[in-house]
Image (cartoon, rainbow, N blue to C red):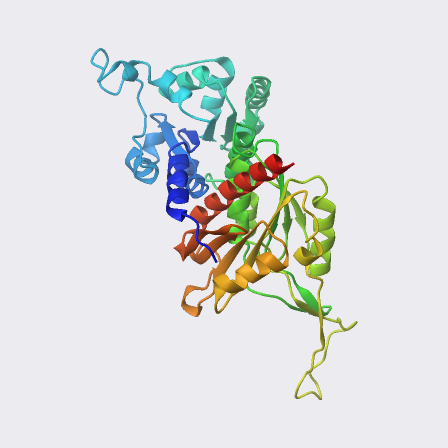
Length: 428
């Protein structure tokens, strides 16, 4: 297979990475402030840069040094960091303006009742609230407090005022609170916060703005009887990262999700989710979703064979062996080989000769691109583990076979999807 100049491709990606979207994360003084560390980590895994602004009270719960280490950026805590009258530069005097101009989304998590009240009434008595007044863009707030404070009419009126101002509330959850009571006031899960931020950014300018992409994830489960099934070890991690990378570029994502997917990771993906179990259900869902779509990323591990399920639980009594007869399932991508109106990307996991076998599937199914995954026992590509993969198109090898992080690979695939869509539109 002819090799394309992938080094130049990688350089384009590096150039693109310098323009990564930035999230301005405001952290206020509540016990849930420690969860900002996980929020930062998950946003970073989605390829977003994070700039943290903390209130003075927040620094009592978590060190700015911790968040600076995680973000790789200085953490802002004071409107006059060099001391009043002796700023290091003019930018330090108007830090709230500079911070507001450099981000793509602004989220306050956790947001205390005190800060919510200030935001609702335009009070700017610290760097975070001053920055909020200067902000012009997607704004989100994730309350975290005692349930009685959250249910207090004053807090609810303030939240309604924020909604009128265009804020999005990431509503708190019900559960055990730090005070030992239970009720609604617990900070929303990291997954919900990250998903909300990605959705807010999704509408911003990107390579795939206005496009609709169908992504499949996870494995299928083919029932043997009412309580047993045949399946595989797929976790859908690469598919979820691809979905998030595509959404970050402005695409609307329809996610057809099979089994084995981590529900917490699924919660982070800004997508319309259709759950399925079997290969037949996967095929039916895809046929419905692809109508009018711009691209299909078939990344699920769909069963090649399925048994005829027994009506009742199979008993082991009197059996030393159990013979199963398996029937071929329909090859979904093969069935779509004549559909040229949208971009089609598949995946091929092989235990030997991965690149050549993937190339054969690429041609056989008439795909626009395929991800060739080289499975090795000591490098099982499940979960967050790195993956040994190549990316091939009909023109040749875009990325060589090598071990790489799934987040990096997902970014490459999102960029490739945009290029393939652009090429298809030019051919029309």
